[in-house]
Each structure stands twice: as structure tokens, then as C-alpha cells.
Image 1: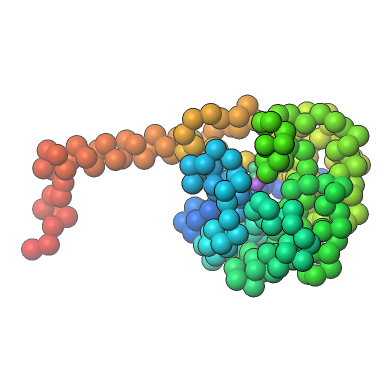
Image 2 (image 1 turned 180 degrees about the vertical axis):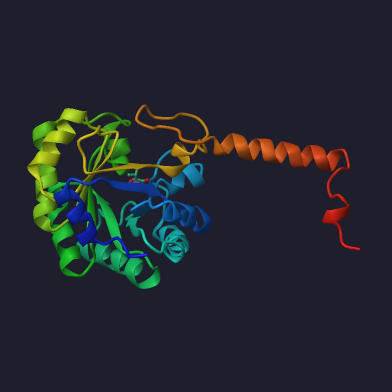
Length: 262
Ligand code: KIV
Ligand code: NA
């Protein structure tokens, strides 16, 4: 299959076509998502939460991101694969972000990185892009900022968010991800820039949509945000399969004659 690239995404926006993006953290899941025609796979630092069981994305390390990016990169034949820079790789000196992005491109088969922040990140985005590392910007709610913000909340400062998105675009970001803003604010941001936008909890006006796969397939324990649509109940399917296995072991019906060697 023909690979989705930064150019494909830009053409999608210009033609008024949509972009689908989901998180992926391992080889088999990434393979299924790629086969399903998802355009962008994100090795998100939500890894720390949905796979690692942490309360925030902050514990994700660069080595963990690389380990999971290797798996996802090996699986994706068509999708573009984007990797989050984990805290604080995108906050320390710019040279360190370039080194982290270079690890992604050298050590995995992934194609780009995502960086939280807007206007204050413009010099970093510019330096990374000129070093050859495609950058997806991430504005609005920034999960790595949770302790400064005092929680996760909808971001409503339209003028500031437009400045952030424009600065990211001007610095060379190939796409701007917009998290948890009112639909009207996302629409205004989308109108203010000409690179593709990808929304999560940002309504209908963005070029694309992203969700955390584990949320979308019903495999997250606990709280599900308002903006999530649950398309499957994989957690329940796993529980039922495990119960059936346990029952068949306990009553002696597994393994049967056909599942045993003679
Ligand atoms: O880490 C992640 O999964 C993300 C998405 C929520 C956009 O950044
Ligand atoms: Na993230």
C-alpha cells in the first residue's frame, strides 16, 4: 500500500477530505489498525496511562517510547506513524529534542514526532524541522501540563489558541493537533491556519479526528471522557473468554482429545 506522508495529509486538507488517527502501542494492534485503513498511528505517551496503569502521561520515558515505537513501526505498512516526545524531552534544551526525534527516526520505522505546546515551542519546532524531523504540534489541553493546570479541563482561550496554532504552523509543523476545546474555538483555529488539524474533544470542524484506541474499543478501566465514542467492548470480550477458559479448565473439558497429542 502507498504510504501516508506529510504531503498526503496536506492534500487531504486542501481537498476537504478527512484524516483518521488512533493510538497504537504494540505490533498486533498496530497491524489491525493499519489494515483497517487508519491514516496515522500515534505512539502516544498515553501509553503510561492505558497500558502502564499510571494516572498521568508523565511517567512515560524515552526508552519506553522507543521500545513501543519499534513494535508499531514494524507493523504499519500504510499508516504514517507519529511518536510523542515524552515529558520532559520537549521541554529541556532544543538539542535534546532533536536528539530524541533523531532516535525515533534512526532506531524505529516511525516517521514523525508530536510535541505539546504552541507559541513557546516555535523555536524548537523550527530547529527540529530543519534537522529533518517532521513535527506535529499539540495545542489546547496539554496533558504533560496537568500539575500546572490543576487537572484536565476544556481550554477556551480562543485568541491564545489561535496564536499557538499559527506559531506552530509558521515554525513548520506539518499538522496541529487540538485537544479539548469547544467546537467553535476549534473551527476558528482551523480557519486561521492552512496545515491539517486533528481534533480530540474538539468537535467536527477539524481535518481529522483522533482517539485513544483503548478508549475507543472499550479496553480502558474506569473513567471515559465525554468526547469518546466506544465502538467495541474488547475488555468485556477478554473477560468472557478468560471466564470460559477458566470454567473449561476447572470442569476438565479443556483440553479435549483434539487439543492433545497422541
Ligand atoms: O498520547 C496520546 O495518546 C495523545 C492523544 C490523546 C492525542 O496525545
Ligand atoms: Na500524548
